[in-house]
Image (cartoon, rainbow, N blue to C red; front, side, top):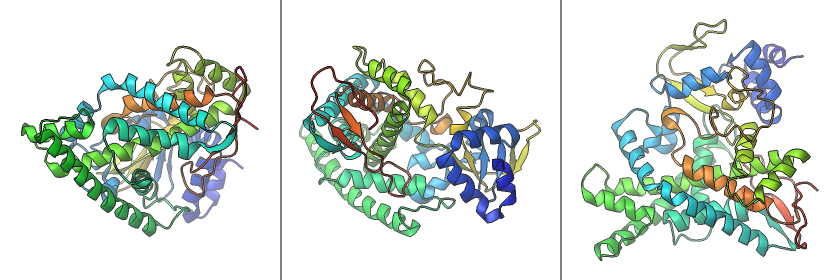
Length: 424
């Protein structure tokens, strides 16, 4: 039976769980059928949009498709707001302090740090997630963002539970790694600890500024802007946005790096080309391979929004669908990146595509704030891994959750010239 036949034959309450499981295990054939025959799929709890044009409209029309579902998780944080003065002001501030000029230095340092950790594990088994795909972004947050001095493991806990609650514990989710109420409680406890740490950190940096010792880290920059009085940006907002720097940087980077490695390692020809690119003298030679891998296996297969008024999707087509106010809509961007109406030969793995026309870093008003950092950091980590000698990975452990939690790699101490192996 086709996917749609099985969906239509199932009880209404079973349809969304069934589709959600297929989205994890066999997404591309599912999406191909939906795009062709029912590109806007109403599953009761949610409506799925699978064509590129509809996903683009959902993410571009923040007036109709709002990020309001994030407010229960993120409160007054500007990312949980749409077209507000606070959103525009604080996003502009954060973009300004995420200096594009620092990206080359950050990239070079991150790749070297990942390589150092891998080399130090030669002859042993390493958890690639803890040590590298999570470990390096955490180190970047400390070194470049200025979040130094937290107790070991705390930065990860704060970042992790905020991500788990905001992105994977919405009303339409049925998380298996923890009960919904437990996830909320873990996020709230994490935020209490994080807030106390950040208040102390901000106070210390403010004292240093007052003593004529200005820092170049991002916390110090936020304080300088706050103290200038030139705009509405008080100390509580400094603390809140400092936390946002951490939460946005770690788990998404780790998930993307693991996914890229999985896709690149799944095919011998693809793997050989990626390893050759990783070992070239050009630091950016691997970028296209990584970005194309993330088209095949993105960290986020969809973005969710809630309608602010009655509207419709696929307007003017045979699939035009009325969507009532208050409905949860999923822009299934993983599907959209394989839509032949918008992507040439989408089934072909083509490292020359780049990011244009993809949703790897989101789209529209809520596109990724740290796009420039992420577009450097993820390939830097992957390049360090692929450039090592004699790496033999085990299976990724997800532990019933949505993100990679552990990945054992045996880092063989081999002579120069041996190849990195991405399969047993």
